Structures are given as C-alpha cells and as structure tokens.
Image (cartoon, rainbow, N blue to C red; front, side, top):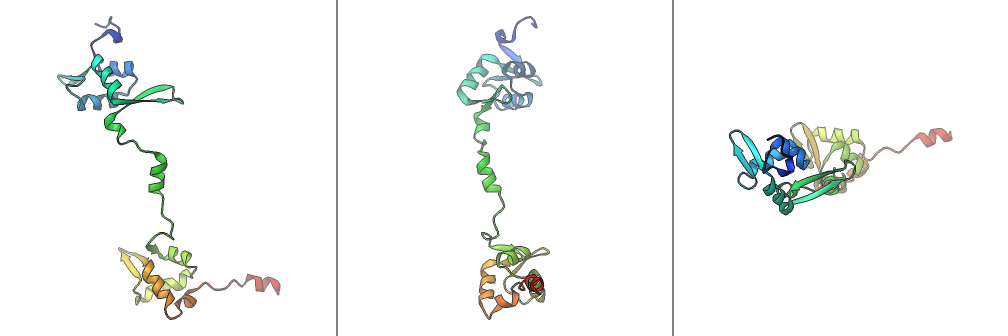
Length: 173
C-alpha cells in the first residue's frame, strides 16, 4: 500500500492529506470532524479523507489564498471564511475612543479635556456633594453632560481652572 503514490490513492490519512494538500493537520482534522460523510470517513478512532471528494469540496467551497511571502497555498473553507475580517476594520473598532468622544471620563481625562486642575477637581470630588460623579467599584468617573452643566453654573470653571504659568514672569525679572 505504501508503494501507491498519494495522487492515486482513494483515501488518505490526515497526515498524508496534510502533506498532499499542504493544509495543516489540525485544520484538516477539524474539517474532517465537521464533514463526516461529505469527504471524510471515520474508521475506528481515525479519520480518512476521500481524496477525489475532498478535491471537489476544495474547488466548490473554498477560497484559495496565496501568501507570497510564504510561497504556499492555503485553503480557507467556507465555514472559516465567514469569520475572516479586514484587519483595518478590527483596528478601527478596537481603538480606544478619544476622551472628547466619551460620555464617562476618568478624573485625569476630565481635567485634560476641560483644561482644569486635576488636584482641584480631585478635591471637589472628594467632598462628595457632586452630581456629576459616578462610581464604578473604586473608580470615580465624571459624567460629561452633568459636568458641563456644573461648569456652566455659578462660575465653577474659574474655580477649577489651571493656574496661569508663572515661569515667564520669573524669566523676565
């Protein structure tokens, strides 16, 4: 049986079909488990791949992708292809939002977005009489809309503003 070349055999083991089709052993095993009766046969505890049926399956259901840097052909089955995504889209979805876009801000983000003193904002939050603070476990989060209302009322913006830079005055003197 070992004298017969792989391209003339009707059934191949997982390892033989991996060598013949240049597809990984794990991927072939998964494909064989999912497609018993279509192109694979379970014989005892091992899977056999029916070579002609698997070739048809690859031609009908797969997108052949050539990776030039590896110089190999990789077959992506239909079941896997629907989960294939564009990496640029994933990066865009997974990127951290800018603090200007967020509705809940940390104290550091709030002080940076509104150009306020972090220490003054922290002291104000510690007093506890603020309606713009939300607590998540031990974190203090600033609710943007409520904080904007708070800043616009009673001149609170000036109270929390950063101190003016005094280094120019010292350099001029």
